[in-house]
Amino acid sequence: MREETLAVHAGYIKDENSTMAVPIYQTTAYEFRDTTHAANLFELKEIGNIYTRLMNPTTDIFEKRFASLEGGVASVATASGMSAIFYAIANVAEAGDNIIVAKQVYGGTTTLTAHTIKRFGIESRYFDINNPLELEDLIDDRTKLILFESISNPSIDIADFDKITKIANRYNILTCVDNTVATPILCKPLDLNCDIVVHSASKYTTGQGLAIGGIIVERYNLEDKIRDNPRYYHFNEPDESYHGLIYTDMPLPPFTLRVRLALLRDLGATPSPFNSWLYIQGLETLPLRMRQHSDSTLKIAKFLEKHPKVKSVNYAGLKSNRNYSLAKKYFPKGQSGLLSFEVNSLEEAKKIADSTKIFKLVVNIGDSKSIITHPASTTHQQLSSQELIDAGVPEGLIRLSVGLENSDDLIDDLKEALDKI
Ligand code: PLP
Image (cartoon, rainbow, N blue to C red):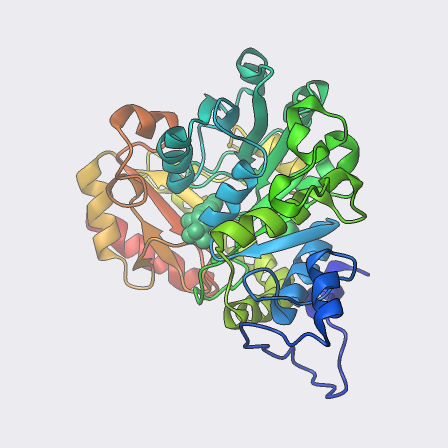
């Protein structure tokens, strides 16, 4: 089936009530038939519901639908994009290990990797997404993950998947792509030889800024890369916390299985069933929305590019953009709704962000309502000056998340704000 159809139907098999809309299974727990049934579920001899921290029928439909859109074999939904990223890291790395992260990532990912996981003994090494060859010098025997964004937020760089995966696969290291900005409609990293995809479902998935959430998706046959791979010994050795279960011996996809059985069990960042239902509603219109977001953003990027007060515009759909050929190669259907542009100073940037009327000053992206952000004073405020430069976020940079309003109204709004500086 094609993705517009998957977005509306995948993962939902109606029960005897035949509800057209997916039901919300608002429950904490599930009744077992008897103690044997309960024991079988805990021992994974039978697959079924145990407790909503681990699984839930509404969340399960969201997971199946999202995995099918990404072309993955399985997925696990989480309570936020940040918990999805943290679980993807914690699933493979432990004290003494390192991961390699693109310099150009969401500010929260930078603080998570540079500071929080450092306190757990996991080192983060950084590479320039525009120069994947840097990876070669950073990899060693304890490298467990290469983490990057398909379209980076807020620097709007485009990952060169072929170059990155070629190096990662030579060393048998897992790649994890944050595909939040692109969404599976515009880019499917698992089809481009990547191993794991993570998302903040808080963005384009809900599409209306309705709920915080995240998801981790695993590619087909990932067990072939993990099995007997010394980097991932803990997938190949008995897990003492699950009475000796060996993940690669299980008939289920090992990466997401371990996230669910070990990390959701112990750390519990599970989405509420109601939020999973909201993500399902969002997915139904995702293909339509991503086309509209991309079309309007390109039009606005072209307007800004010609404006005399704008120093530079960063949108990979512009022919002048250094990532244009990568965008055509990996994002032929559109480059999503995020663009950034730079004006001359911090003051000018603040003035513009304070002046727009339709673009609201908000730290979010992927909403149907247009958003303007000044990263240096908000999302990236906790970064040092050097980290700001490394993340491609100069002080005069403004990020727009272009919504679904009429694009001419949005251009008029920006025109008036630029007239004020
Ligand atoms: N990844 C990207 C690219 C993001 O933009 C964000 C949030 O802005 C996150 C991850 C974190 O997601 P959440 O806010 O759902 O935790």
